[in-house]
Image (tube, rainbow, N blue to C red; front, side, top):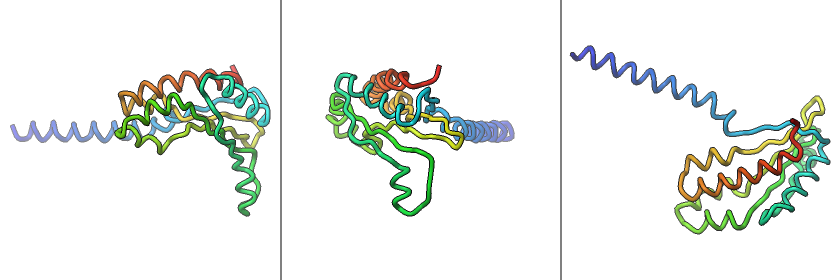
Length: 161
């Protein structure tokens, strides 16, 4: 009897370890979504910026130029790379109304990454906020799901089909 229980416990532990490995390998691909842009770097930034400002309640907080910061910091040259920090005050207020939900300010505002790879192709990256919201549940899940749908429309303006 003890051998059967020991055997079962070993398989439970093995199953947990294997599941942990699968999650460790798959989660990065699930949490970050990458799109190849059909436009140049500057056009991609401009089209995304225009699409954001046309969306109800969305605002651009800052456009970051990482290439410039890295160069000015004395760390050499790099291909074009940056991000656009965006916020929807309506969505943010829904999350931030509850003290228990304020912990998600660690990944607010939402950022859309834009970068040029070594072969000159432009890409847009985004955090999978819809999936992330599901991990928190409640209001956070609702708001982040809505925001994810709205951002998907914005990125569709530049994403290659």
